[in-house]
Image (cartoon, rainbow, N blue to C red):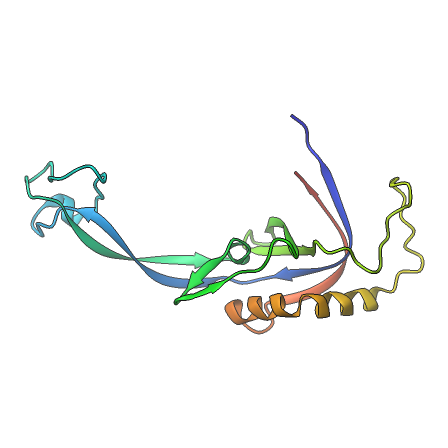
Length: 171
């Protein structure tokens, strides 16, 4: 078992924010409102047909749960109020779910940038003397405009910041 060190040099975005939503979850439980199991919201196994406490046949109950949506959830596809939000893994890579407060995301491009900085022989030195940082940031904003809009729609105006720099992560 090994560890790979990955390095990205170029534009990236930080998505900050969280969204708290309330969702309904149906559980199989005792329908007897006087039963301790019903009151404690204990869920039965799908194969269980009777309450072990009071003997009633099983029924269902809808619980309302509070959930927190963070930027990484959109990378996996998330339905919020009936709308499925999806940021494409083919386009962007979520490099670190523990940036800042553990809820923010550092997101880089999976596209080959027109500003390639790779050494022709794939060695470790990279010449950054002629880098046009603002041009790369502008390319990134244009290339991922729809994804940026998706994040801002879910997490609010100002939740996305575009930066340029060196990102390192392990996989």
